Image 1 (tube, helix red, strand yellow):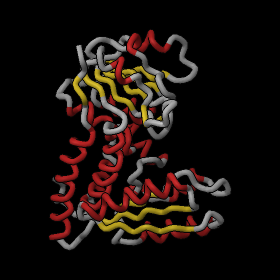
Image 2: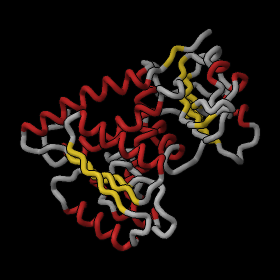
Image 3: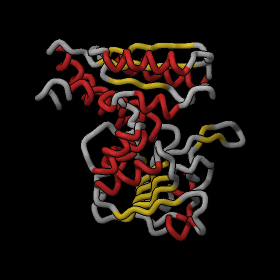
Length: 287
């Protein structure tokens, strides 16, 4: 068996086409969806991520505001700026790029973003909405993973899903989203003994451990859906995930590659969240 590839680039392109249509409908009603992206400091990787997010907005009909500040920006000044963006009717989503400089409390900053504009889905209130099964803005990476899983056409209801990783940004919300889709979910992590014992029972396996080759072929159930969230480098410096791709693809039924799997979907779901936030202000405009 050779797994079918879950092409995140192609799926992202399809969803972004719909994003552009939805954005145009809002613009026709006099409201252009707006995203504010805040970058503090000069971290090179963060600068690249921010640039890609701003570019994606502008290419698909969303208004984007990029605010860059020096690394020594006082925490109070950042919180004051977030308060102003919360009150700005032209801004429907606020994203503060992580990581922040050490003198700034990231949790305090995330909490300052109004839940209706929390397009990263990181705040305690957003997490509470997800936990309670209420409508709300979902963290972009697990949201994208769900779309990848759904794109296979395989049922999630009644399946056993295993999530490797327990972070607040991926592992925990991923598990909750799978639960909401009626899967039976096991969460594994660095303290889990005999990881393979659990993964071999998974119909759906999501690897978000942050460590190369965490998942090998002998750890995968034949025919399983495997979603690789990892971003690592091999000895040659080539981008790779948490899954031994070449070996696992001979066992799994479906597999997402790195690059070209989860990555393109993360920014796409940011666009979707911004649109959802903008549409919630005008009844009857949701696609």
